[in-house]
Length: 264
Image (cartoon, rainbow, N blue to C red; front, side, top):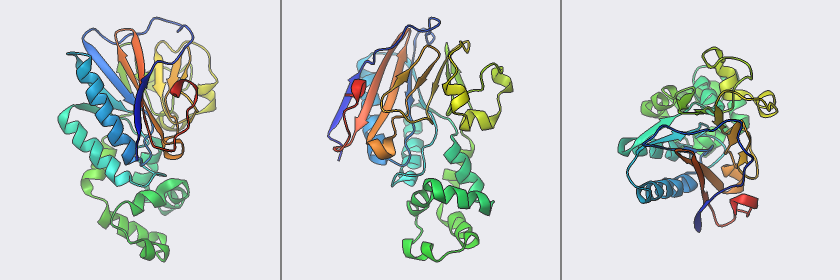
């Protein structure tokens, strides 16, 4: 059970460039949820309360992808995201785990890979019997998936965006390939890239806000901000708030979450 919800401001180096969202706008970006409906529901309540307390603005929430896999209730997370989007502007990015999930309906080799990286937990969050699951072939499992996963959930994932630009910030799931114009970025990089993006220290022309790469704390660098704090294993789900040039952080925790530096 979640015991606490805190807001914190993380120390950061000076950015390469002054970064801001357009006047009158407010943005919240939510890191990788990975089936942790308990933390997501707490963060939804926290963002709604924080947004109301800060006064009028045109507010956009960006979910950075990887809503599914590894945690216990991916189905519940997708449904909660859909319901939240009926009440406010919620934009969703496609992560590599959504990509695997969708491809698994048609390709058994992708399904085999998907199951090794949290897909089992995702499928069992839908009405697929756990005992029957153990005896299914991949082809039988695909048939069960098609019957158990609502079309609305598949469409929700299929309609997710690849990147979102708001002011001086670019929101993507994994990152971008340095030196490549945004319009020429490959989907595989936006959803899967890691070291080449993480290790790059140069100016991208905007601040990239991303998930995908787990860190103990928010990783705020001169050219990027990483907010995947490993919710499925750490018990901490993080969101970044932006308004004007201001930045702040919200975190939802379960009772067993460790205090980690700025995330305390």
